[in-house]
Image (cartoon, rainbow, N blue to C red; front, side):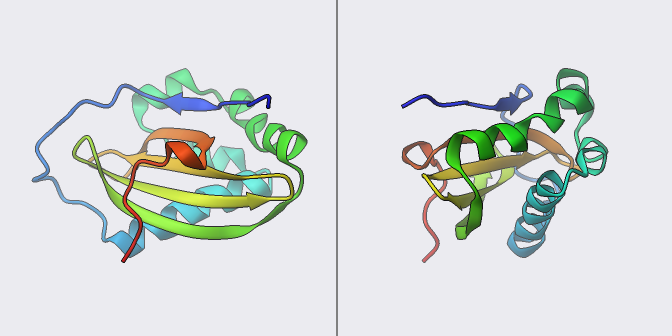
Length: 134
């Protein structure tokens, strides 16, 4: 199977978890908003949410190609099957399990201390890292 792996992640450095984090609900809502903006072509709205390092590494034109690439490879988007929230390298992270016609994949977003997007990646479900919700 051919995978388009869209690794769009800035260097994530372990920091003290003492910073103010989103609630799990707020982080999930923001991750779903990013997904929706990508789906409807509002990449400029996503770019505004990137932290300074990721915004340099991920220009709008590169980000615009992500969703069409996923659709081409996996078929039509169906739904979000599962949501996972937790810490990753002392940062808030959300994994959304995205169901497409041909396959289910994970969208992982990692937020920095200010709630900006420090990492965005699409992976096979076998590479999900956050524990399932209880």
